[in-house]
Image (cartoon, rainbow, N blue to C red; front, side):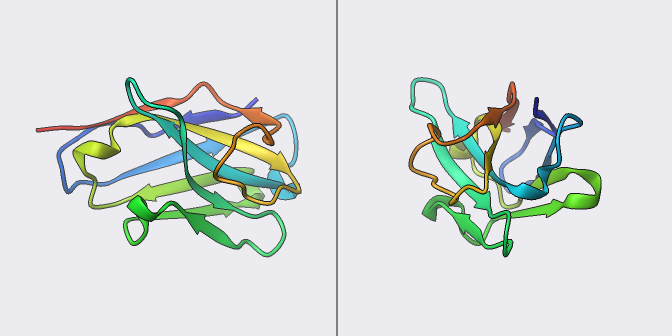
Length: 123
């Protein structure tokens, strides 16, 4: 029910903006998080934006480089990724949790997720 887009291949230091959209429900009431999974690694929480006060949360490795935002009028959430590094290479998944608490440690609380978009950082 969530559709991610915006992934691709960029060089280190470059930028990408991921989008997450749904047409099946109102995203306003959902905390929206981005998780990522690199080859051979567990899925990890990257960032989250709350449904209520739009508080934002980031894992340490992306603080200062990534920015999460949402546009409720468009039913869309975004992840702006700057200063990308090879270690950011992963499949990025958007996940939504109804009135969620933005738990980046576990995706078990999330109600919906997308198919993912590939982000590759390489020369």
